[in-house]
Length: 254
Image 1: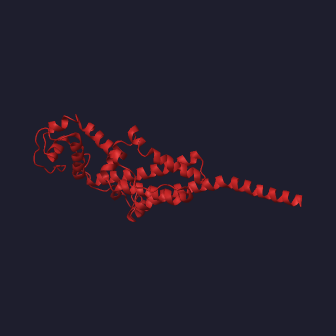
Image 2 (image 1 turned 90 degrees about the vertical axis):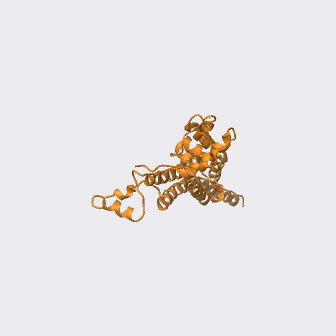
Image 3 (image 1 turned 45 degrees about the vertical axis):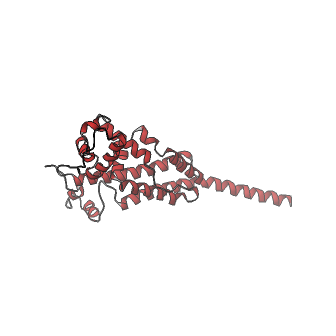
């Protein structure tokens, strides 16, 4: 039987003493206790000390409330990440990726609202678009073509979001009353001995641990470095040819 979710009840407010901002703030507080999935209007009413009709006056259904919470998270959320710099593109891009992952892993509610519930919404797509533009521009300044810079940043961003979402889903699966078993425990050492050995060493099959994340990140960075090297070879060759030609002309004049 699923565990009954309860909320801490506050002293009841007077009628008309609550507004949308109070409700949204209270919803975030309650979500920290019970999670987004278990958030409900009756529980929120108890948490805020108001009748549930006071909440329905502003938010007709849970989706309306979650939309407001998502907008609040998007408007207040800013990646606490360093800028990507052309002169040290590899290290700064890696730091950018690690900081994004750490921020979302450290805030499950943020992950649930932005990366899981609203991942493909136009509103979410606009968040940080100027910062993405700056990062891509820095990669172009480092020597990648615009397409290569976009693909590199997109691969990094997708890698981060995939890592965070899979980890969050794994946590939800482990927390579920009806399915507390970790999926890694289902690996059969007799039929899949290599996989069992890897799992026993601490890797996860369906969630990205630190080692798996770093492996994928290094693959993306290595590929970008190869593209950058390929792009600079013609420039170096042209510069060498120009220098040789200049020396030849100088020698001919003398």
